[in-house]
Length: 497
Image 1 (cartoon, rainbow, N blue to C red):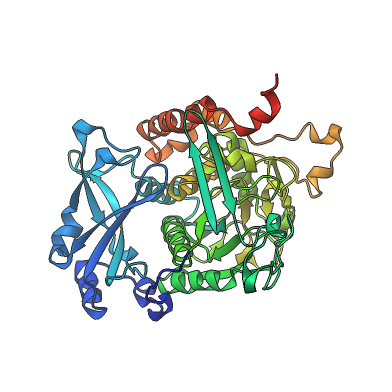
Image 2: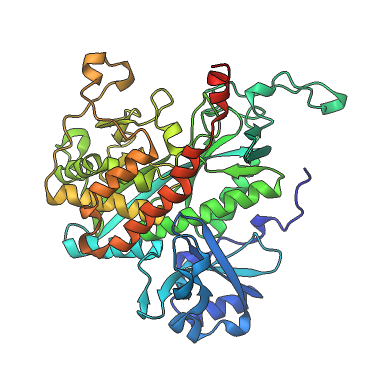
């Protein structure tokens, strides 16, 4: 497939407008004039976690847009309104602007909050509103002023993906020039043959080119993110064959980081497409190799003081940090309904692929659900890495849910149990049987959320309306449709029965 001819992303200078973002309509309009913008794109997130958008011309960019919002049909958005209550409003947040290099026409993008025009206030099922309420609730508790998140999103870039499901057939077919299964394929290079250098299964971590064919694409993504004001720390090839990647953003406050996750996914998908490739954040697209996670580093701060640090504590952590971990582990089954929210998530959460299925805390150990990274002794570096989430999560809801679980742990001084600082996968059966595990399916997670959600509703952060809608959507549109369809492997197992 030929690559699309587009303006190079690096043409835009690093965005000072995200370092010192506009605060109001006047400053946004000045930015539009400075950069010769012709279209303004308004983006918002549906309940499952995908960006939606529509665009306006410059005459519509005025004070009224920021004060009163602009209308749209909420009944056409997943998880939003019914047809008889469809009128909704989008209200742009001027602090979220970035020049959108995915568009040929000079375009400025803004992330919006969803407004209910009848109630004349924020919409209860707007995921960004939930995240904003979580930050507000944190301050109201007096525990801390800021919760920082640093998610590590992994993803695959493939050369082709085909899939189909109907009454009489169902299949998927993934292909990648990097796939180890292609080591014997005639690829047509230089009149025939194969150029080799396919990362072996589970050996894709850190090889240089020519094994790593995606270095320049990742670099282009990084430059685009930096130009849009998203700080990036590192990028590299990940463990799996066939193009698994990771780009790590610098930590940021909860809502800002959730915004950054949406920008990140947008850039990854579109830049891959420019190169004639396709990116996916689906956790487990390949059988028998590593899957994609979204390990979430998090910490609580008052001003410039990290409340998770204690020079005399286990792994240099404070008691408050360990209570926070206790909350994550206590509510992990319910959390997975937001943090690992797809049926495919549970193809990843199985032992043997660095999957964090064990609900224990540990230092350095990647087989534990809650890990304390030990790269540095600096007080600023002390944090907990919750490793169960994956990148299909709606970041606004997942981050808010994890914060609420941690705050519940602090409020109740929840003991996370003793640390387990050894390879959990190599424990004896007697030792392993006493370790709690994450749910084995989306059904289990949803049932856990049905029983355990009071901690999410404190401070009106999550509402009964949102939780019930989430559960209904997941059962109706994901769990039941997957359960009703025959699986290809069932034909191998049972056709001759």
